[in-house]
Image (tube, rainbow, N blue to C red; front, top):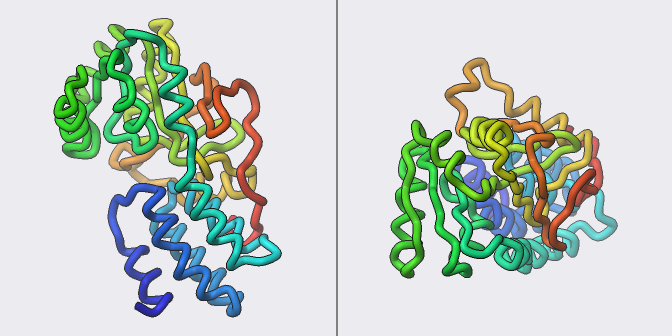
Length: 259
């Protein structure tokens, strides 16, 4: 498939895991590095169609700012494949804890599957993701239950920990599945800790973050599948290097072409 046609296919794709989106974009973008105009245009189109994907913005910024763009693209593919965030999260989760997650958090799922002593309350969002995850975890003999979105507050109040997952992380806020803001706000009121999982490629510099926030603006934000949540509702950030608190350094340069 021609690189441009491959990118058009990716741009038209619906909900795709961030890791898959990066892996599928790498060969097509790497094939365009000799045509800087086509490369920039392709990156912009991808971000326009996947406005909340931090890893995709990270990939594009690394390629556009790299001294050897083709090699940089393949390094990104390797880094996202080797993401150790799930391993750190699995090792840090409290013993015998009841944990609330929303939908199908792609990094956190692997951590939950490693911890047989943790019970999961999975809030249903985006039409069936929570039910499917609960079914999959139950299939490997883990304690997991689906929670209707209307039961979010009750689930959070009964939990030991809320684990949210960032699709992108900015200086003072993050992008997560819709419902995350409500869950974090209830947790803060109820005194339940909130952990934010931010895997490889999620932390963006100020310029890229501002551009992403603009692309995510909607006239009817209550209809969106993603939302921006203030970072001050989070107690701990879990990154590929482990737990962090305070400012999180960005994972990529602040490419002006992508703002």
